[in-house]
Amino acid sequence: MHNLLIGIAGGTGSGKTSFALEIMKHFPEGDVVLVDQDSYYKDLSDLPFEERKKVNFDHPGSVDFDKLIEDLKALKNNVPIKKPVYNFVTHTREKDKFTTVVPKKVIILEGIMIFVIPELRELIDIKLYVDTDADVRVLRRIVRDINERGRDLDNIIEQYLNQVKPMHEEFVEPSKRWADLIIPEGAHNREAIRFVVNRIKTLLSE
Ligand SMILES: Nc1ncnc2c1ncn2[C@@H]1O[C@H](COP(=O)(O)OP(=O)(O)O)[C@@H](O)[C@H]1O
Ligand SMILES: Nc1ccn([C@@H]2O[C@H](COP(=O)(O)O)[C@@H](O)[C@H]2O)c(=O)n1
Image (cartoon, rainbow, N blue to C red; front, side):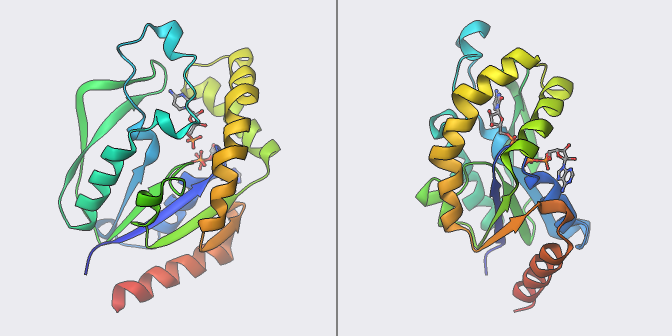
């Protein structure tokens, strides 16, 4: 039996990470590990900073899905991986830096485009989509990008209108059709958390 892969998709700021952390609270630390699609953004260190800033990070081409798929296959088969370390301020991977991820019985993968690529989607045993209104998501994103990702308001608005919103509508929102369960307002949805936790426990005991 391979390790169980749970996928949590949803728009930017929808609460994917928060939902994953809520799920993890219900299991011993040694049983669940979290992997994020964001760590697999392609390294852009070959481009000048001004060019990197213009890249469309909401298009599937900006993510190294080949490496993500390879790493998830390894984790499912109980093989440790070296996850890249991504820097959102410089839009690059940290050179020669990795986080070693040790496989656990349950692997949670979160990311905006994890249901978009068929080969990746097919690896995921339970597919969850956190569905949060766009106005709430964008407000959360403004706060996060200013506090944590070195952005200013003009830059956030321009990126949102030109890239984040159209790509969400083209790729992320339609990928909801692949979800086993659509969860409104992720981390505060107590019933959904209980439901998912119980389902994982059942699968682990089989
Ligand atoms: N249900 C919720 N209610 C209120 N705030 C939330 C909720 N879920 C997440 N947040 C907050 O919104 C921000 C983005 O959440 P996060 O889980 O990082 O989203 P994502 O991983 O989808 O980008 C964080 O500051 C988080 O604390
Ligand atoms: N250099 C980068 C890379 C990605 N982004 C944005 O991150 C968003 C996805 O992350 P969430 O945690 O919000 O799911 C995505 O919408 C990209 O626009 C970025 O701004 N810069």
